[in-house]
Image 1 (spheres, rainbow, N blue to C red):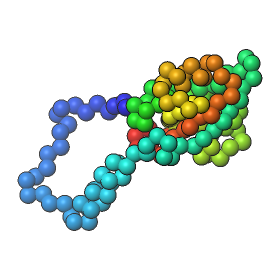
Image 2 (cartoon, helix red, strand yellow; image 1 turned 180 degrees about the horizontal axis):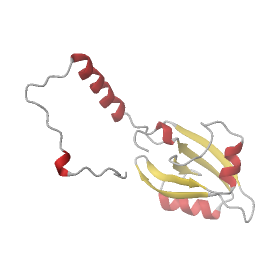
Image 3 (cartoon, rainbow, N blue to C red; image 1 turned 135 degrees about the vertical axis):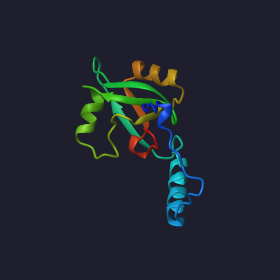
Image 4 (tube, rainbow, N blue to C red; image 1 turned 30 degrees about the horizontal axis):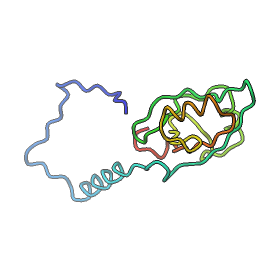
Amino acid sequence: SECLIDVPAQAAVQIPQDFEPEPEAAEKAEDEKKKEQKKPTPGSAAVAVTLTRTAGEHWGMQLTRSKEPRGLKIKQVLAGVVQEWNKDRGDQETMVANDVIVSIHGHVVEADMLKALTAENKLEFKVIKGSALVNP
């Protein structure tokens, strides 16, 4: 995961010692913490997408590593099979930026997934939607 926020040391927040949050606010904060802790596990919220390409066609994805969940994160969808697939699909079936591919053709190891992308023309992707992740 990447941290894009740089907080200078002098920006520290000071809380008075006698400060007590309202009970309702404390409950909301606790609920938010619980929501943040709920991260989908690979396979639990995964959408299965089977795509086929012809010789010379590109899948059309710029990928990067994802640590949580482990897999290949889609940085950008480019011209190719994935873009064509997305045109006629609802949000839950598309493959878009911030989605994480957790399995390709049954492979879960990054190197094996990348090999399958280059070697195969028909693949089954298991994708966790970026919208389902806590910090995509």
